[in-house]
Image (cartoon, rainbow, N blue to C red; front, side, top):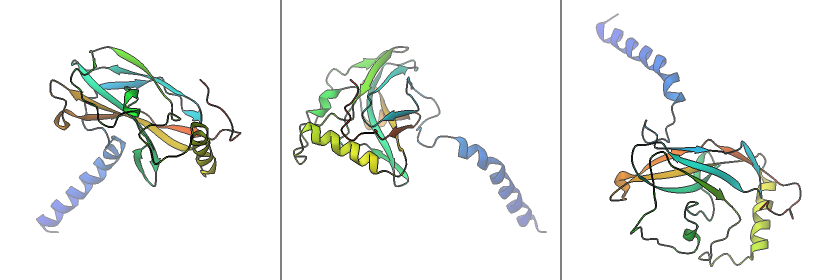
Length: 190
């Protein structure tokens, strides 16, 4: 065996030893140091159930946060249809927000939030359905799914004073399931 062959075998062996550790890491987290924690999520919710949770700033800095719902579809995570910043429901009604005086979350502080997937943005003018039809279409789509729908929350964290893409880091909650309601006319629990 040549020296070069021995080096190749050693490199391959190192990769085999490191592979399990690399598979256990979360590739979606853009840094090893998490800035926030998402707490209070249940493992599953019905189609109509409100998702109540809290976000805690575990960093040593003031953070600006945006929170969005995502779903697992076709092998990857994408934003939920009609997505909006759960922390700022005004995003349902306006297309562009200006953060002149952003609402920063202090170190150690928590904020309780609720995500209602049946809120319909007024700017979605191509969606001609009323609120009841909009709700019914989501319930029907859930009931046609062969398996429970996987969802998670994405927290975009920004460090000031300039809230730019350069300061963006993302943190993801643990996934949770959406289980279809028994009746397609079921109303959300409010």
